[in-house]
Image 1: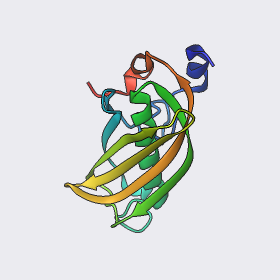
Image 2: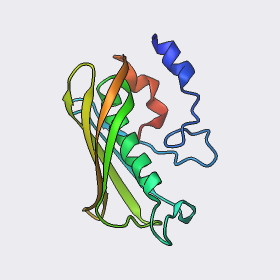
Image 3: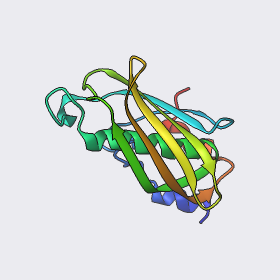
Image 4: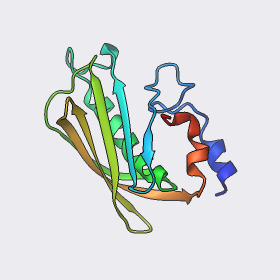
Length: 151
């Protein structure tokens, strides 16, 4: 699959990071290719509640999944999620600044082990581990996703 084919697959309508998705989260990222990490900060609105004032577990899972995908992208790998395990430590509040951090733990070639945390004021409220499946390696991955990066 060529880079242009990856761009055809990405119509900028992703629920988590697409700028064209009217109801999406529109996440932006700080990536560190040298360390295989990604960080995003966001505030989740009340219409993504599970219980009143608490972010729905599916949205929490989406945030953790997306940050692990972008950790891989920071190292040039475009991936899809093979498996994900999420732990919900405490309720995640809506309307507050969330910090989501992901990192590559081990690249096994045919799979990449990753981890992630979701924090509010330095307290970990949710965490995840995943195995991501590489779809394509691109040395210019940062150029491809440049509009989703925080400068």
